[in-house]
Amino acid sequence: AQTVTQSQPEMSVQEAETVTLSCTYDTSESDYYLFWYKQPPSRQMILVIRQEAYKQQNATENRFSVNFQKAAKSFSLKISDSQLGDAAMYFCAYRSNSGGSNYKLTFGKGTLLTVNP
Amino acid sequence: KAGVTQTPRYLIKTRGQQVTLSCSPISGHRSVSWYQQTPGQGLQFLFEYFSETQRNKGNFPGRFSGRQFSNSRSEMNVSTLELGDSALYLCASSLAAGVRLGTQYFGPGTRLTVL
Image 1 (cartoon, rainbow over the protein chains, first blue to last red):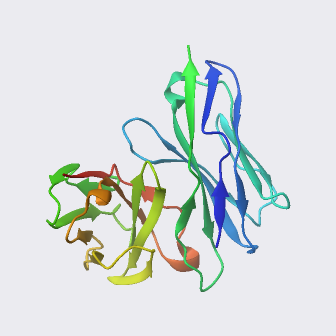
Image 2: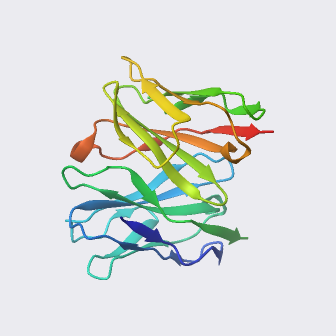
């Protein structure tokens, strides 16, 4: 079974600074997706960024980028120029893309990010 | 395009009762998945529906059930509620299923409290 580990329960960053959230995962599959979701206090789960395992290039969405290290099974999220609105719980998630598999999302426990003004 | 909607947003029930939660996916999306979120267990997969068929089920007791209608709307039902069923129940929709599942978009959730 796949597992996702987020080793940082809490992180804090100063407004306008850069922060990196860590995520490692365990799988024997080669075809899969990785996601970062953000859950602010409103509880709405919002997709931040998505990475397809067969793509070498790291995904980027505006101020959000990932460092995907497939061999190391590592998938970190970098937030540049942090804003107060970035404060939220961030979840790393894995989804298989192998035929015949259960395509559920497997989530890490989350990292609570605080942004200090 | 409207996002995923879930009703009701908040629900208070007592032990032994049953509850039905509803989820309307994004227009055009045919796959609906349900997740339970608790402080202790985190986010756990309940089940996935596509074209009115349950395609996958998580490791939850039979008290948890669901269904999907021809318009892709989905409901989940929990019978004989227990205190441990108190949680945020999240619904997620996506265009297709299986290897073409794509990205899942979440609704705001239903907060269920069991007293």
